[in-house]
Image (cartoon, rainbow, N blue to C red):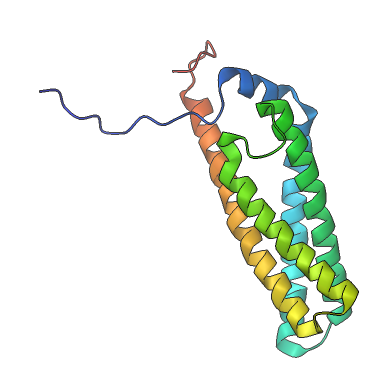
Length: 167
């Protein structure tokens, strides 16, 4: 009887060809710049939104910050779709990032609903901020998914032999 392995083999996030495309495209750098900037904008906006929720003050600043966060989200989604096309051959829902894309659409839907409520007046300021907070909660989940994938990609890189052939 053979001993059971102490760890289960995992599926690599990228094939060698996908990794090469990922490393060669400018869109990887674009995503690497936009993601932390979006997170910084998110942090500032979250503080401003919470300030409004808690004190009733600063509606204008909170609104502008949500609009900036939403603009970053749309830009990172479009450039991320281009990145997926270059790396995986399809704009969205590549198997390696399927669930991240699903949650990204939830995030986009919530941000878009916020915009609808703001533009049409269908949501009062309290409902706008509640919608923004729901969008931000979904964004945190989505950011966590992408950080997990970044960790997986680094783990894969650490276990790839020097020859570049996947183990």
